[in-house]
Image 1 (tube, rainbow, N blue to C red):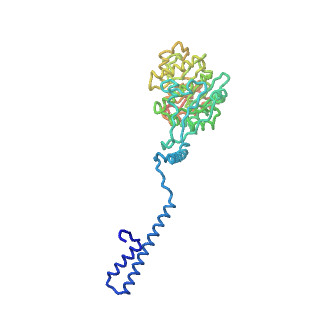
Image 2 (cartoon, rainbow, N blue to C red):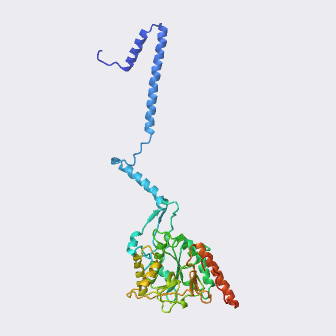
Image 3 (cartoon, helix red, strand yellow):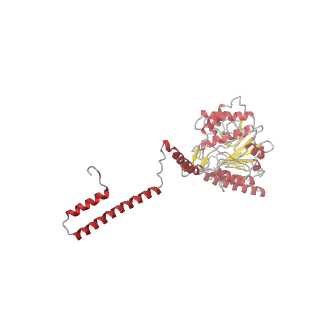
Length: 426
C-alpha cells in the first residue's frame, strides 16, 4: 500500500524483475541472467556475514588496552600497579649504591674526622653523601668497613705505658712490594726493633689498603671519610692531600682523648733503632724536622709531622684543639704549616703543652741527615716528590743499612755511610 516500506527481499525481487523486463532478450537468456544475478547477491551476503563474524571473534579475544601511566581518576589503581612495578625494577639498582660512611671513633667529639673549618658539628652536617655506582663508569661500589672498636684495638696494641706506634696508609702505599712491605722489613733488620710492630696500629684510608694490611698485620683500623677518595697517590698539596692530612691530625687527637700516647710515623720512614730512648726527657709534643737548627726547643726548626710523639694529657688534647681551631686562620694550608705558625706565635699559656723538635742526626731524612750510621734511628723520604722516587731511594737506604750491619759485625764499618746522591737523597 502507499506509504508502507517494502521488505528488503521484495525490494530486490522487484528490482531484478524491472531490470529483466527491460532487457530485449529471449526467455532462456533471461532465465540464465536471473540465476547469475541471484548467485552474485547471495555470495555478497555470505561474504559480509563472514567478515562481520571474524571481526566479532577478534574483538572478543583481544586483550584490553593498557591505560597510560599518567591516567588519573578511576584509573588510579592502574597507576599504582605501574609505579609498584617500577619500584621493583629499581630495587636491583639500589643494591649497587656505594654508601660512604665514616668509621666512628669511640670517645672523640666528632666521630674521628676533623672538618674543613675546624668543627665536628659542621662536618657531620656535610656527611652522608650517597652516590650510585651507575652515575660514573669508574666508581665501583665500595665495601662497608667492618665493625671495629678503636678503644679495643688500642688496648691490645699498646705497650705497658699505654703508648702505641701508629702509621697511616692508602691503597697506593700498601701495594705489595711498596712502602708498607719496606717499612715492616726495616723493623726486622734494625737494632732492637723486631718487637716494635707488636705495638703498631696501622690506620688504613680505603678498603684495598685495609685488605692488604689485614693480610700482613694484626692491628689494622679502617678510617673512612665520607665522600673522599684517599686510595690513589696523594701528591703534595694536590687533590685530597690537604683534607687527608687534616683528617689524620684529628684522628691523632682522638687517640689522645682515649687516654693513649702515640708515636706517629709516616710509612715512608725506615726504622733502624728504637726512638723511645732517644726522645727528650718528659717529652709532651715532639716533632721531627726537615732542617734542625741545633736547639730542640727553638721555634726556628723546620717541622715535619712525619714523625710525631705526643704524650696523652689534658694539655696535649688542648694543644690539638688549638691546632685544629687555628686552621681557619690559615685557609688552604696543611697541618704542618699551621703547626709551625702556632709554635712561632707561642703556645697559649692556658694550653700548657711544651713543643720540641728532633735532631736530624738521629731522626734524619732526605732533606737533612747524619752520616754516622752508629747514631741513626730513622730515615725519612722527605724532600722527595713521587712514589717511585721515594721507593727507589728508600730501597737503597735499607740495603746500605744491611751492608753497614754486616760490616759492623765484621769490625770494618768505620766511615761507611749512605749512597748519595740518589734520586732524592743528597
